[in-house]
Amino acid sequence: MAAAPAVQLAAATLPVVIQGGMGVAVSDWRLARAVSLTGQLGVVSGTAVEVLLTRRLQSGDPGGHVRRALAAFPRHEVARWILDSYFVEGGIAADARFAQVPRHTLASSVRLQELTVAAGFAEVFLAKEGHSGTVGINFLRKIELPLPATLYGAMLAGVDYVLVGAGSPADLPGMIRTLARHEPVTVSVKVMGARSDDNVGGLTFDPATVLPLRPANLPRPRFVAIVASSDLARGLADNQETRPDGFVVEGAAAGGHNAPPRGPRRVDELGQPVYDERDVVDLPDILALGLPVWLAGGYGTPEKVCEALALGASGVQVGTLFAYSDESGFDAGVKAQMRERAVAGDLQVRADWRVSPTGFPFRVADIPGTLTDITVREARKPVCDLGVLRTAYLRTDGEVDYRCPAEPIAQYVRKGGREMNTEGRLCLCNALFASAGFPQRRPGGACEAPLVTSGTDLGPVVHLIGATDGPGYSAAEAVAHLLSQVA
Image (cartoon, rainbow, N blue to C red; front, side):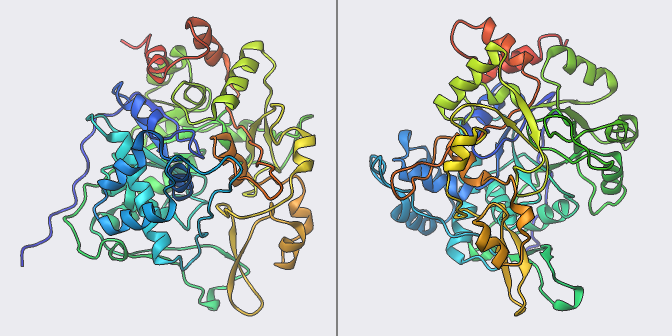
């Protein structure tokens, strides 16, 4: 028998600009493809892609993009059952509800694993279709249950970069190497209340479950760790098993989830976390590790790109500028409000300690009609039916269950959660799908309200909107602006 071919590192020229991975569906395949076509690194979000794919199909799959991607999936019977289960010609009725997708657990069903792999494949396939540019996928390490299946699907589609933040990504290099050989991976999952002798185990994903006939080894994508401290960067780089291919060093000005302050918990008059000198990353220390570094959080101008390069970085990661671009996945009405308020100078973006069930500070934009509006928030009946941000815990009977502080309070408390942990929590899962134009309809006709996340550096957004003839600008125009002072 011939030996299996060695795992190869995917060839890539280092980009100067990495487009930030923004979920849910804000950095979708359209945005990533548009950035990749400019020669820079376009990035798709890997968050809840299995739900996103089904909602696109139930919306009629305009343009046939999802069906085209599924036609290229290496196991046709999987693509067939997904289409049979979720595709609706012309889209579901305006008053209809999206069909639910089962929630991931430590023992997700074979069908859910197949759906998740196919969704990861489709998002990257569409982003890479028809060109030779590089495409990455972004994960939150804290969302661990669907991670290996989504990653495997992305690798089947030839993803070039894997970027991971929101927790220590120490196990990702090994996971990538193992999945490239189509071998099973086991992910250590934190189960609250479990002791080492409880023998809870972890999550195991076996590629053979989805592709029984083992294909040739896959090229290994480059792995970039998103960090907010030199301690984590050094810890990853000093071990050959965890050493990444580069770092994104993210500051507190970025949108979405941010690292909490390293000092004692303090808030300002808006309830935002207070950062101080302890949170300033020792950039020379990270650069000394000898790996490529990209700077993020407030680097969305040509001057900041040049500053990053002068400091010795390979470039920058930029999210907010692309989030407001024509190709981003925000709902058109939501995006119009974001742009109008940004130009008018009355879009307040703040970091909220409580809103995210993860406990990480989360930046939200105050926009009427969204969940930052107290009237809208109080009208919503709590429900947890997507469960992307659930955490595992050990029940008194020794079984593993899942809970979320944004679910109905009585349900959360019944599962052993403390009521105080529910104060101010919002269902990011449903709200972010609504902001991407896929809101779930509830009994009685009400739709889930959106919640918008954004970085605080809106100056470049306002500049580009003012420099164009229309209400916005393209991703290509954003890239050209960022690189306009680079020789």
